[in-house]
Length: 99
Image (cartoon, rainbow, N blue to C red; front, side, top):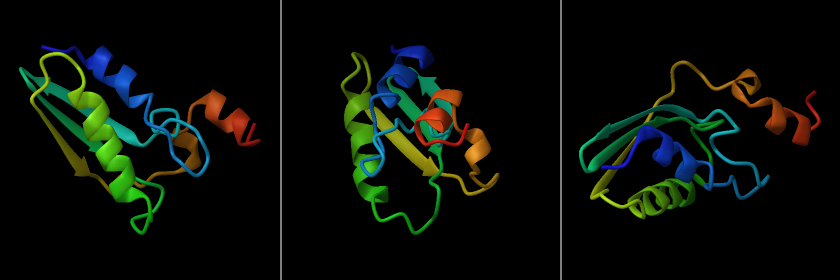
């Protein structure tokens, strides 16, 4: 059974293809729960109309499924609380010139 820390490590490998920053550093991950071989992820996007939503979700599922012991990855979209730049890590803010 994978740990939450291992799952978060895999999620850090998922990059927003437009800006090259991980979805973790962007603050898009709201919750990760591991229940034996199933991983449930609650995440958001900067906008519901994100044109890369499907691409990013497929990457999330692919990377997390690569962990030993994972048989299923469920991704749920959360729109509240709304994403804001304040959710970004200091490193992501610096990279984007927001600090």
